[in-house]
Amino acid sequence: MYPETTPEAFRKGVRMSEDVAAAEAAWIIADAYRPAPDTPTAYRDTSPLPAYGDTPPVMQPDRRIVPAWAAGTAVAGIGVGAAFVGIGCGVWLACQGFAAVSLTSVLFVTLPIAAVGGVVAAIGTALRSLKAVHTENHHHYAGPVRQENTTTKTYGVIARTRNEHHG
Image (cartoon, rainbow, N blue to C red; front, side, top):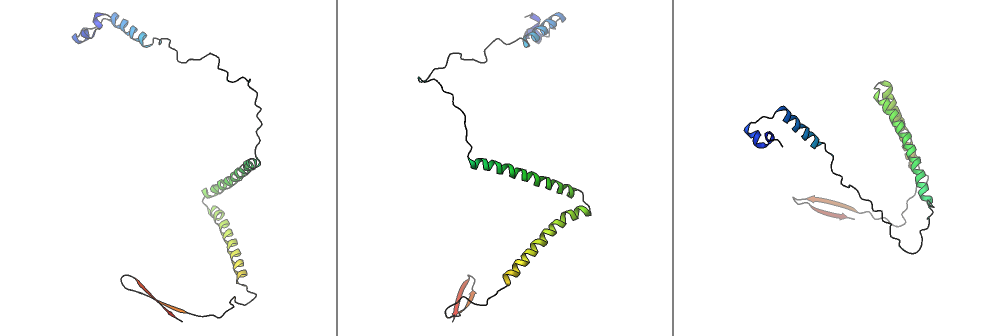
């Protein structure tokens, strides 16, 4: 190292000449880009593997049998996925209709909902009218009937209840 490049020389204010500065810069750059020493980064053990047992290895054929329930589940999953793709496309088309806010789009949204509501109301009315029809007028009691009346009174800050049976 040159005497002008020592830390003491810098502290004293000694300036380097152009030749010394160029040589020092070349040395710093060469040192920074010097390749690292050859050190192994991986090791491969080439020694043969130990043999275990006295029987040579045998080829194992791969014959996998899929149970029927697993195949059925897979087919059902594919079918459900395809159905939901269709439903998703329908929802996408409906959303395209929602995006165009106009009388047509409002009718596009509300008319099917109103139609479904009308069908549900009609079915409910039909079922209620079928339920109300009685062909026979009879009761299911076979013995004497006794009627009792109960009067309940609740009073006080802490609720006290008194039941009176009248029979």
